[in-house]
Length: 128
Image (cartoon, rainbow, N blue to C red):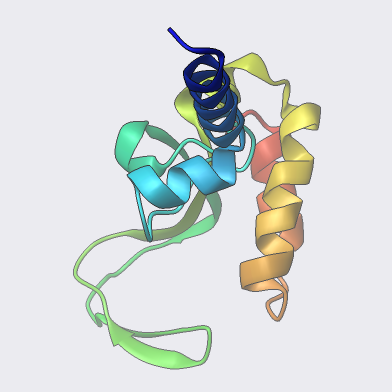
């Protein structure tokens, strides 16, 4: 094999290896539009998420018309808020205290205008 061909092949291998280690770029190619674990950045379409429920459940008795975050909704069962920011694999590896920054990051991005951080924090530190 000629030296020029070897150099081209080496360059392609380095480019591929670099591309594959840049997780956000890789995930955008293999799972476009999919969210991902906040820690390992594995797309949700390739891993199982860990759901964390927070706040008090909303029980529906005789009247299913209730207000959630200022909006009237009809509920046919018990409702509780929840979120998922870590895949099951990362969630298991982290302690509740180590998980908290990942939840805070998502809270700041998605929930910043609501006053439920203390409920989320309590759920995470409680092992949820």
